[in-house]
Image 1 (tube, helix red, strand yellow):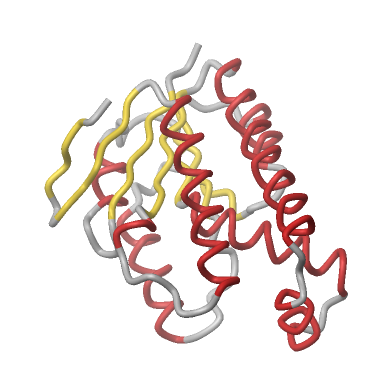
Image 2: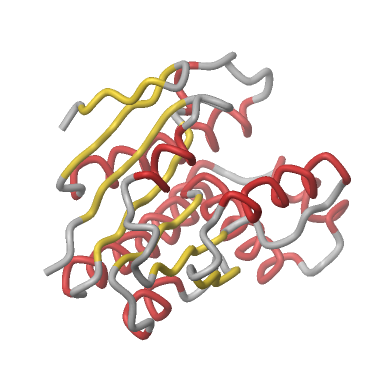
Length: 195
């Protein structure tokens, strides 16, 4: 069975580069890129830097949906999922589009009206999706390296919805950390093994 490794850290901590260094550059690796659309020039530059850094023999799958199927079907020695935070955020907005349609102005209005019960249902759907991913990864022969943002170390968001969503991201990280065989925290480019 493959092993699951979680790499967490703050923005620009060096976590993605460290996660990549854990994998054999000569092996067949599937890079699961979860930021599927660069919505502005600055984000496009970030995506491009990640792409340039990857070995040419690694394949890339750009998706934040059906990730369990991708892990199950790809014939590779390892998967690198970068990153859990973007996957969760994109998956959340996909759930919102299913409920409220494609208009982001309407989605923003509806998000602010979510009740605690609504939030619990959405949180459950997100955690269930991650459970599928982790269950599939555990059964698969390929290793899985997951990069995530350590969201609890930054500024406390100013509004209730953002605080709730930060908490959801924290619960995702807790689930990943619990199921991972190894966990690294990267600070200032320095990786520390914490599990």
